[in-house]
Amino acid sequence: MPTPLADLAARIRLVQGDITRQPVAAIVNAANSSLLGGGGVDGAIHRAGGPQILEECRHLRERLYPSGLPMGQAVATTGGNLPAKYVIHTAGPVWHGGKQHEAEQLAACYQSCLKIASARQLDSVAFPGISTGIYGYPKAEAAAVAVREVRAFLSQHPVPATVTFVVFDDESRRLYEQALAGA
Ligand code: AR6
Image (cartoon, rainbow, N blue to C red):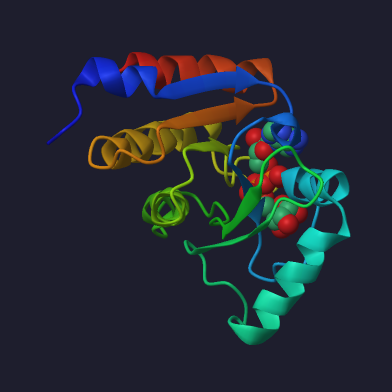
């Protein structure tokens, strides 16, 4: 049965801050296909979470993704020293102007992460703005995709019970507020 809209709104949160500090079951990493780390939120997660996360990423890469994690897919590792028990790594699209299926690829990232959370019964998940940093996806459009996909998934699934969007800067906070205010 679809979740009523009021319940849906209560299950979605917006926090401004550092995703590595979030006390949730899983945080999402805006990673890349290599799974071997990088800058931005990826760098911050590996720094805060410690070497166990990279160790597991290497292992997964060798075992499951010898040519890299396909864009739009996701895979979970331990959270290492993070408050979150798991990190769900996904590879978002690089923005090429919007006519190369970037929106579908970004939507696929959110869906893949949420499917993992649901399958593992993880009751709270925090997302950064996937692709909105180094990968150049316009923040307003990305926030609209993120909100749409999370709402669609939560309306069909009881788990995760809550999703938190974690934004770093004031502009992103405003854009998410606008996206969340829309129907
Ligand atoms: N907490 C919350 N949000 C953050 C944090 C943080 N600690 N740090 C950055 N952000 P980016 P991408 C925001 O560049 O665009 C890496 O090298 C940031 O303001 O981290 O998907 C990977 O290895 C932005 O809005 O990810 C890939 O190669 C958002 O997180 C590549 O960057 C995402 O910015 C992925 O690029």
